Image (tube, rainbow, N blue to C red; front, top):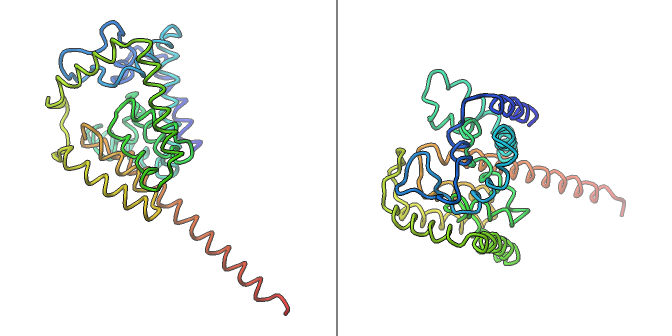
Amino acid sequence: MAIILALGVSFGIGWAGSPRRLVDADMYWRTDLSHLYGVGWAFDSYVYPPPFAQLVALVRPLGWPFFVGVLTFGLFAATAYYGRRWALLGLALGFALWPVWDSRGVLSAPLVYPVIGNLQPVLVACVVAGFRWPALWSIPILTKIGPGIGVLWFAFRGEWRSFAIALGTTAFVAAVSFVLAPGLWWDFARYATANAGAPPPIDVMPVPLWVRLPACLVLLWWGARTDRRWVVPIASGFAALALYTWTWTPYVVAALWLWTDARSSSKHRIAADDTATSTVALKPV
């Protein structure tokens, strides 16, 4: 993780002092609350619900260098958290493939997202951390929306307290945002409705949402009933409203980490049980 955090510091300082603007970070930075949503679905237009734009407006007085530096470091830190050693492998592949392959290639995605300033690593980290802190599910739900399907893990397991915390936090944040600027939410509703059937500005995988959502629900239900946490990032990643060809990659990296961590924990439990059994057997009777 130290290597990834060091990369975050390096890129953060570099972007903060560079005249070049990152594509996605610049889009977040340029959000204008008086005219947040455009007419069509453009490549560099703001498409999320209002809360994140309102947050950016609060930090704008601190300046672009501070914003892009902190954002970049945070994205690398989130990458380190959700993927651990698998994230390091993903970043290494990204660096290795960058000169010979399009930077938008699937295997380059773990590196591309923090480098361009996209929120994706934060959302994946929230999916992983959401098992422990359910309130974090409000972040994917109130940004890219689709990945929030993973919150149903709690419902399928009957963990109603965690489910209530996740949805309650989401409702609270949305309510505060609405009270502060109700017009933004009406604008978002009109924007989302008007562009529901519009083709995305970037190529997407040829599997429609109405096919992916039921599959993700079945996968989540199976994972919840069999205690397989690694299915949650898989389902969240493939439930993206616009499934770009590389969108799901960081979620798969997170699933690999959860899968290997679960196997390691299981082996340790078995070893501990065997040790305890052997100790009992050796006691004199």
